[in-house]
Length: 357
Figure 1 (tube, rainbow, N blue to C red):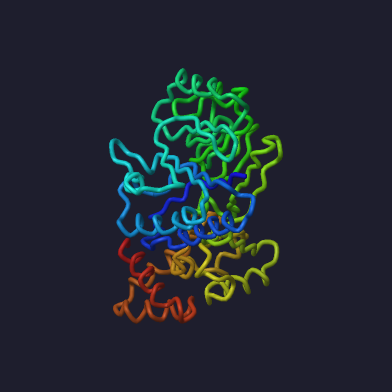
Figure 2 (cartoon, one colour):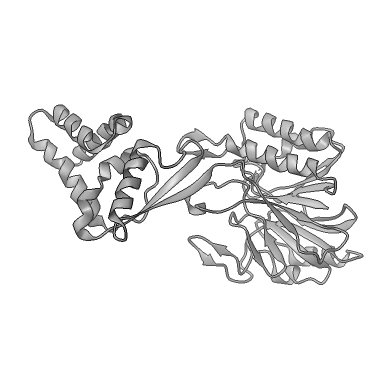
């Protein structure tokens, strides 16, 4: 059996904070693989790093993580992704200098036998040599698997929609449909999805708010019977991007209580969750929230009812500028709209708005 993960993005940051959960999620996936008596190989389908020039610390941490598999005798295959390789610089170069017995770096298309199955590997390419790839697929002596890092026609990408066929950066349709390939696993797109015989494993952690409420998985492919539906196991070690819905229009009292709990930090654990907020309200309910207080939370706020709401609350702050003692007025304002834990941040938000007057 082969375990598959993708798009690790070690070295990822969020709002200036290093994403330590990436390493935790990777350890979690590797421990799942080591714990299974059936898993004999692991494939990472690209973007091991977030940058093609990773820090020595990130390289060292990944060397340590990969040793978990090396020491267990699990064959591991690392495909290069678009984040790993830019121009002539490869983030995977340090791994090529280590005399691994069970770890192989793949930066050029090739066919290899993995756990008894012939596998076509197609790392990220700026332009796909369709003839070369067809020749490799034709050379497979038996029906096998494909692993790649590319866009996939028919997949959904937030902001782009459904990808059309045979664009320059999409995996060629003729290669996907090749009779020697029973199933493909293709990295690059972060949202897990299945398109025909192509499985997009998705990233192992939510990298930004576009992935809100997405679950992440380790996939397991049986090599004895390629037609068996692969198993997917949730990876629960990373940060979770969650959306909080404050629906004042439907239930004002409930939304008011949730809003207050959100400001006080008791609604949800913000140490392991990144929150986005969706607010639904009628025009006459504008005064039930305060934009400055929400901004002080420093979460990405989405779907506020209309710009009118923001302008209404910004105007409240701007009114402070008519007083001669602005500092005292700001202090009084944030004490009114924010719990104590948010007042320092809210004062800065109010000051930023005042500067725009």
